[in-house]
Length: 277
Image: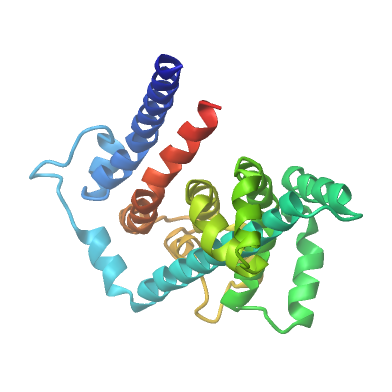
C-alpha cells in the first residue's frame, strides 16, 4: 500500500512538473521579447535579447502611464475578492449539502452541477440588464458578483467531495462537546479543507485574472478597467505597440505567480490526496 501511495504521489508530481515546464515556455518567450527592440521581436523571436537588440522602451511606456497602475490594482481587487467570496460561500454551501439532508438537497446539487456545464456568458445580455438596474455598471462590485456566481458551482462540487471524506465521528464528537454548527464549520471543517480550497483558488484566480469578456461588458470605462482590458489601449486597428503589450503582459504575470506559489503546496497536497484514494 505504501509503495502504491508513493508511486501515485510521484506520478502526480511528475505530471505537475511537466505541466509547469509546458506552461512556462510561452511565459519565458513573452518576457524575453519584452526586452527587445521592435525589429528584433519579429526578426528573431526565439533568441534572447543581445546588447544590440536590448531595449526598455516598452517598460518606459507602461510605467510612465499612471492609469496602468490603477488597472493592476483593479485586477488584484477583483481577483482577490472573487477568491475570498467564492471560498467562503462555496465552502458554506458545500457543507450544507454534504452534512444536512433536506427535501431539495439532491435537486439543488443537480442545479449546481448544471452551473458547471452551462457557461455564464450565455446570459451576458441578462447580466448587463441586471447590473444596469442595480446601478453597478463600471464598478468592481459588478465584476466580483458575476465571477463569484460563475465559480460557486465548481467550488461546491470540489469542496463537497472533500467534506464527504471527513470522518463523521469527528463532527459528532464536536456536537457532543457542545460546539455550535458555526464553530464546527469554522474551527474544524475549514482547517481540514485547506488543500481543497487551494485547488479551488487556483482554478478561480487564473480565468478571472485573464478574463476580457466581462470587464469589457460591465466595466469598460471610469478607471475601473482591469489590466487585461487596459492592455488593449496598446492595440490599434493599424498599428500595435508590441513593446508595450509584451511589457504589460510580463508584469501582469507577477501577481498570478505569487498567488500560485502561495497556494501551490496545498494544491499539490489536495491533488495527491485525491490520487491515492
